[in-house]
Length: 384
Image (tube, rainbow, N blue to C red; front, side):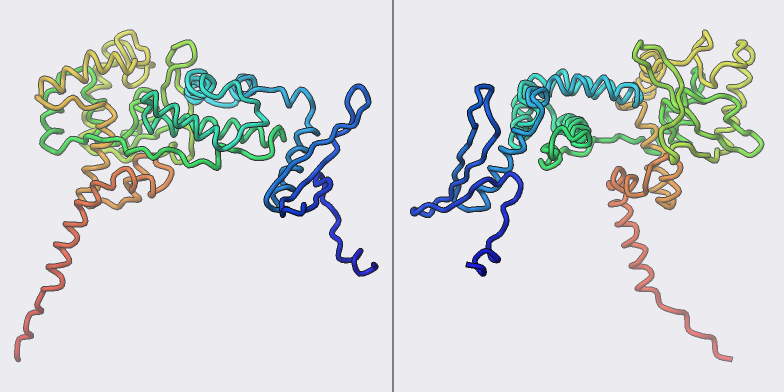
C-alpha cells in the first residue's frame, strides 16, 4: 500500500477526477463551484486518452475561473477597445489601416465570437471568408497581422492564454511588381521634365532613391551644398483630418545622409533661385505655388503623369523612381549595403528581397566574368 501511494501522481490543478472505463475510454469530472441555489456544479468530459481528458478539464477549470465580465467579451468589443488604446501610441498612418482591417474585415466575419473562445480554426475561417470575398492575399496578410497584434495585446493583459492568430500561417502573397525605368527612359523622362516646376524633385528622386514623402518634407537646411549631401529627417503624410504634416522618420536607418551627384546639386541650385524669386525662402524645398506641402495626388495629376505621357513612357508610379535608383545602381555593380543605406532599408536582406530580379540578371554577368577569369591564359615570360 505504501509503494502504491508513492507511485500515485498528484493530480494537477484543474484535472479533477480521471479514470478509465472498462471499454477503454477515459472519463474526467471537475467541480466548478456552486450555483446561486447552492447546488454543486460538476462537469464530465470524455476522451480516448488520459492526457486528452486532462486537457479538457483544465480548459473547463480555466474558463470557469474567468471573471464573468471577461467571459462575455466579444471579439468586436475587445477590438473596439484595443483601437481606442492603441490610437495614441502609433502614427495615424499605422492606426488608419488597423481601424480599416478591424471594421471592414475582421468584425463582420468573426466579431460576434467570444474573445476567450477564439481558436485557430476561427482565424482560418476568417482567411477563407476573405478569399471568398476576393480580398487579395497581400491584403489578407495585412489583416492577419493586425489581428495578431491585437490578440497579442490580449495575451499580455492575461485576457487569453495564447494568441490563436500567431499559430495560423498567413496566405502567401505574390511580390508586388515594380517598374523601374532604364537609362534611356530616365533620359527621356528628365528631358520632358526640364521645364516643369518639379524638375529638381524628379532628378533628386532618381539620384537618391528617397521616398516621395521624404522629398516633400525637405527643408533647405537639410541640404549641404558645400558637402554635397542631403540629410533625411522627416516625411510628410496626411493626419486624421486630411491635413499634411511632417513627422520624424520612424527608424534610425530611415534617418540618413545621402551624397548627391553634381548634376543633382546643379538642379537644386537652379530650383532654389526660382523658389527665392517666388518668395518661398522659408517654405519646403518642393512646395506648391502657395508655399505649402504638396499633395501626392496633385503632383501625379498635374505634373508626373503628363510628363510620362509626353515622353511616351508607360504609366508607372512616382514610387518607381525610387526603384529606378536602386535598380540602376545595382546593375552598375554598386555594393548592396551601399544601396540599402541610400534607400534607408532596415537591412540588406530587405534590399535583396525587393530587388532579387536585378540580382538574377547580375548572376549572368558574374558567370560571364568568371568564364573570362577561368579561361584566362597567362602570358609567357620573356626569355632574357
